[in-house]
Image (cartoon, rainbow, N blue to C red):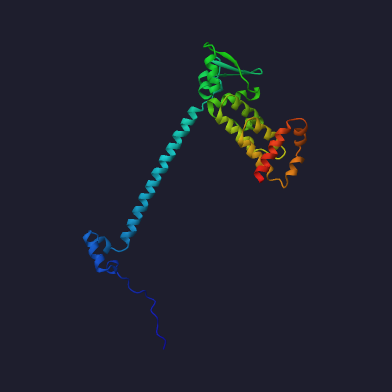
Length: 256
């Protein structure tokens, strides 16, 4: 006859009895005998309490971070206030003028953010509502002045006038705006515009723009393909051939 195998589980050994005598002595000395005799549930409770403690710490840190971000946003909003309704002659002290386009502003704001404007403001009459002719293209005058108050320029203005914004930023020493314009131009350079963008990079001594052009042209299979670019013949015949020489030298240097 086949012996029947019992399906009953063997009796479990209490957790206390699983400890060696030395361990039991240490536990007793530290006053944890009663808790350990209750079995693994004690340790599960300890683990749960530790997990809850860490979770609470994480929630506190997250709350602090949210509060810090909220405060930072409020500060940025305060510092970037631009309200066209108050940019009137009655509340401003200078009128910037370019090609028939006028924009009201504050001398203190312009001077604080541009060393070029600072020098010009010191030379101006102290009377209110002085008019100053600026060397900025009329279509970018307002967004250019807007940047002094907000630290922001719209994607639309960059898309339509990035090179003009770059020129204005460099002329009036606004490095943060210059960097924004350079990065936008570099990001949107194509093979078809590479040579004119290269010229822009050379004119403004912008390594960011020049590197972007070189990276685009280095993806061509053969440098002879550069000769086929639509802008090449115009530059060779009508513009500065030395620009092309400089470009080829840079390309060859990158390849070798």
